[in-house]
Amino acid sequence: MKKTLQSSFLLILSIAAIAISACNKKAAPLAIPTLEINPVVTDLTSTTITIRGRYTTNNIITENGFCFSSTNHSPTTADIVLTDTIAIHWKSKITALVPGQTYYFRAYAKNDGGTGYSDVLTVTMPLNDAVPTGTVTTFVGSIFGTGDYIDGVGTAAALDGPQNIAFNPVNNLLYVSDTYNNAIRTIDLNASTSTLNISEVGYADGLLSQARFYGPRGISFDTQGNAYVADLGNNLIRKISTTGTVSTVAGNTIPGYVDGDATKAEFFNPTATTTDGTGNVYVADRTNNLIRKITPGGVVSAFSGYLALAGYSQTSVPGYLNGGTGVAEYNYPVAVTTGVDGNIYVADNKNQAIRMITPAGDVSTYVGGLYYPDMITSPTSVVLDAQGNMFIVDSDGRILEVTNKHVLYVLAGASKTVGFKNGVGAIARFSNPQSIAVDKQGNLYVADYNNNVIRKITIAVQ
Image (cartoon, rainbow, N blue to C red; front, side):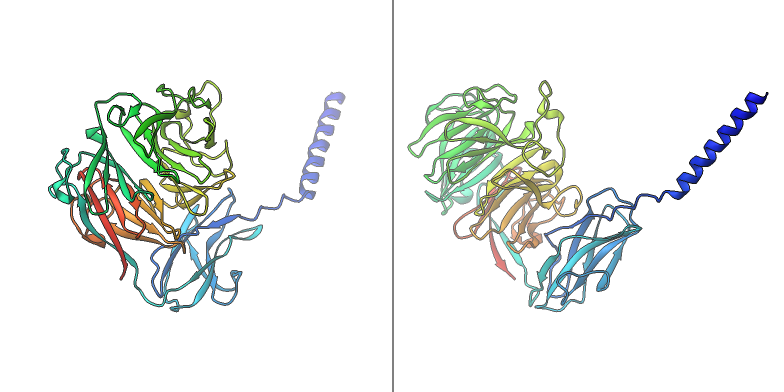
């Protein structure tokens, strides 16, 4: 009995000591939230703007919103504040701003640890409410939207499922992947069509008259004007030389994922290509969720994207994550283009984003993304002009522009509204538009897939 009482007494003392010790210890301080403000704005007029932000760490927060000022270059909650509903991401439409005035915006969030702020977004308000607007016409293909195979001029020509379009600045021709004709067509700027290659489905190199493709898709050009074609069905990257000879750049027709020597490399449904000034070719390897690189020496590597562990298919690892090579994640990257800044831009379809890859391989989200689902829905193509303005095909029915001042506008079409109608801005209608190209004069050309036509868009500020 004595032993039992003694043991109980010691146990009580131990519990008391632990309790006192716990009371004397200070709780770990709560981490201050970290945030980002979206660099692309919408709804910009001379007096209004819509901005977006989110917090980037899993902090407990008690308040979030935006603060801004026209005088303080690093605004705080002591300046003008707009609170919002507590959420992972939020947006605000700010009104009653002054035309021509420069403003500084930051996203903020509070918790018991303090107040966190994003980087500063600087915007100068326009002096008027004019915005870039597209006027849409039918450039090539039947005005009835019917699919066929006819070479001709303008609406006297016919296509069947035009899926990709690209402009070759060396010869001033548009190249079109005409899906159901299994053809690669060219169109001059007077709307006259010709056929580079039309054949039965297959795989053969050689002269264009003898070569075979299987569902050719995205096309790009090097500085000499040679074309690089993503031969989706053959899982190959093909080259069409300026002299009209087709050769295989990389791949062995086997769908899969293998890096290394170009003749042994494997791709899985490549959909697009782009080149840089030093002869490298970059590939949107769609089903592998990777951006691949082919050097002039014929070596294939994973330039950007998460590398699955050996034995696991790349198709099992789609995701949405920014970061460096081997870390960043994509979900159905379907188009790539190279900007004048040397960065590569990716239409990351199922992530509803345009991603940017620096020459060093660092990936960020340029516009859209899963946190900002109202900006882009299903991007299928992206291209930039010489001034750095970006044009995006949103296959839900819109053609978008992100200016070099990071303002998003809808140039033409309407979201989730299908049709075939020419006109200005939101009056125009598309049906599953898939690809876009821009010529030297800044005119846009859209492969309007279900309508079996190429549309032309001229842009004016109005």
